[in-house]
Image 1 (cartoon, rainbow, N blue to C red):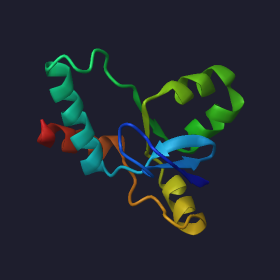
Image 2: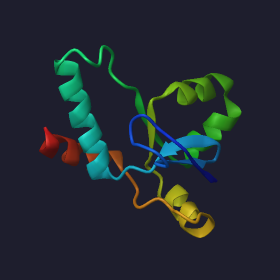
Image 3: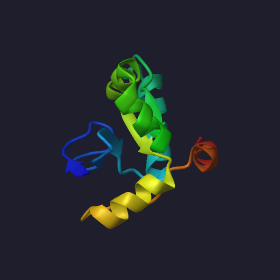
Image 4: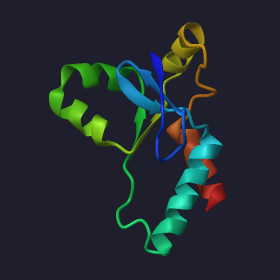
Amino acid sequence: MKTSSANSLTGPSDTIVIGGIRSSRATRTELAEIMAEDVALSRRGELPLPRVIMASNGSVVAQYHGNPAYRAMIDRADLIDVDGMPLVMATRLLCKEPLRERVATTDFIHDACAMA
């Protein structure tokens, strides 16, 4: 795992590579803010296509390494959040700057609704 530089969605040094996958360091709240900003950009006509946001966990990492078509799809995503606690724990054990939290999709949906 290594920290990566600039990501157009979350800013400099806000990505980390976990299991070969470039992943966002954004918290649930930050991800909801990104979503709200995208809605505003879209309404102004400044975001012609929606961004592709995916979630990563251990299963995704395994598929990423075992399925070339899946890997290509993941690599094209605009942002990948980390929805697997084992991945979050691995960053806490192995990284100088670990992920701050798991971005569980089932919890994020409430943040997104509140932001809307």
